[in-house]
Length: 270
Image (cartoon, rainbow, N blue to C red):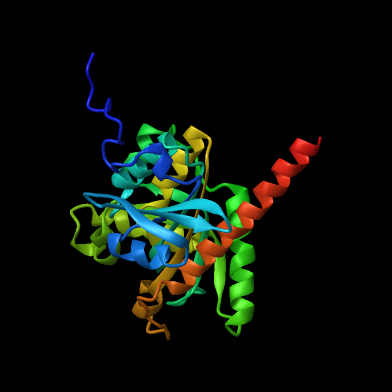
């Protein structure tokens, strides 16, 4: 029986397997893709369809792809699904978030170890109560990269921990307007009390697809500001500069390339 998935190129991201590397950086914004690709060698655009802008280049001789996912879990899940079909097995989401924990200031990096599933996409991947978790090897590489960046940048901060993934941006920033404000507001307070670092929109979906398909996923986010600090009239900073998170992701991939090569060499020698 004929299917919309029968074509040579992936249905949504419009890539062929030979155009996609094993390692992938996943920004949300299509406009951020060329900026990330500029850090690779010989990077070229291989596809652009809908929200999916795709470039592939080389890092230390290994093919690396950059693919935008748009906003939210559904399109992020599609991107990971189709990139895996093209042979990718290691993903780092690079995005932005709003700080929740008072220790987070605008400009801090957030490395997501897991994501609270307050969205709809992961219901089609994980059973209720099952966590959306990042892969430890990706978390480790990102933390090591962030450590090195902090040393070079006079101690700029990063945090590792839980983030909150949602479908409604305005359900976070203006929850009192919602018809279910009585549900949203106390839940938000409980997440703060439990130490959730920040809120964003794609990590849970990326992690859930990675867990189901048995591929490695992680995320590094730039906190653009902290709404809780602002509401309490505490000092804060605001930024739209994602360059530090991008550097962190690319250097983490460099570390994983080197580590994967060492593991392969040991297997081949064994």
